[in-house]
Length: 624
Picture 1 (cartoon, rainbow, N blue to C red):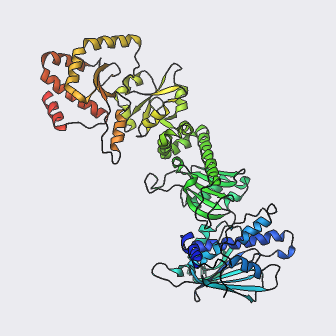
Picture 2 (cartoon, rainbow, N blue to C red):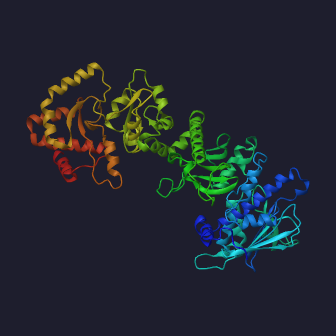
Picture 3 (tube, one colour):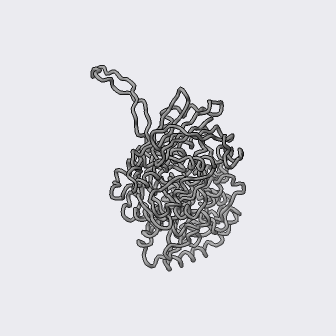
């Protein structure tokens, strides 16, 4: 019995119990090693005709003896290599081969750390390796039951290559190791982790077929064993771009992500440079059921040379593009030794930056060239992009602002900020907007009546984040954002302004009395000529708008309620002003009740609750 060169049980325990967190990973690791062995032989076969043979990985299950076998027709090992590679933990033959042949081979070798083999001890009590080097005459057998050590002896082996036999552990309460003796389990693991290994992975599988000679009207069936290739071998992203059709992209999307409808768009790209990677990105038609929940996990499928590393690599997508699905495959990744976790390296950041730029450019291109599709995407995922523009104190606002869409009162459809500015008169100083809970509610706001009458375009902000985004952007192409509910909003000409000033002066005592009645509920009471149908409305007196007040107070754990400063505006042209003037002179008590009804009505128009419902109902009853 030979001892491992590390001579440390703790190190092997670490390899098995700490580095690898998922037991099923062992199959991926052994198949990756087999693929490397085939790569090495394929490289040698370019100059040595004797090294050419059927390159394949064969898997077999023996349920009676509880063994799982992985065999390759690759380069094999000599006794010295067997001792060196399997007798020393963390000794990588692949890494050595790569270093020795640097610049001579284009093969993308997977294993570089020399620990993947030992992951098999997570599921096996005993591992037996039979191997024969392609240029050797003698076969060798390596066997180990774990940290106690290993043995190496000569054995008969007809063909070169390596065969690994795992004697699986007995089932226990915590884990059912016999699952790895089931055809469906092995098939699913290979298709998940090793589907794009470039060599065929073959296994004898059970199939149900129609019995030969059985009648058509009453067919009989039987089970037969057939050798089947379990992996697809050539991933779509490895094919030349000219061979990748739109239909192929759609089909890949539905198969890979278990979707039943086509994506809005598929994007195929090959990037070469400081970091080389292939990617396929998709814009879905609909968000996943949990997309807007805290349980949602964003990320792209990450492969290293066709081997799945992570189902969802969060580091490759910013939150605001979390709806994007796809895959990335790179040979330049810096992985940790288990290949389960990415190291935070410059390569990862470079790929992430490249992916983000690609998504940005494709979205802008879609907005310009296929607006109907972009509008569909925005309807489903626009909220994410708006939150992206707001998050981090607007650190991403400049890169996202051109993607933003808002509903236009004039166009009655979604428009971009660039389209709004282009459509606005040259002398228009502002980008006007109105905020509310829905397009219908905003459209009925008293403040926008005059604007609509004058043909001024108003953007409707119906999402809670909209106004916060506008505050962070402050302006777009030189035009500042202005709410129709701000105190200084006016569309009046000089003559109209003079007329309003005159009426305000004439009604000074009345306005002061109304302010006294309402107390701290409002900061000021003013006349306005912006209203047409409605007698009153509420507007904001400070930077915090009424809509922002509602959004902030609706947030979870909002213990201290914020309060926007409000101004009550009374229409200077509505008959209610004459009514108030009369009550001020003749019936102060009824004036107080009328003012309170008008104030509560203005709150309701803004989507705010009535302060005192019983009093409100009583006042209305008395006035009637």
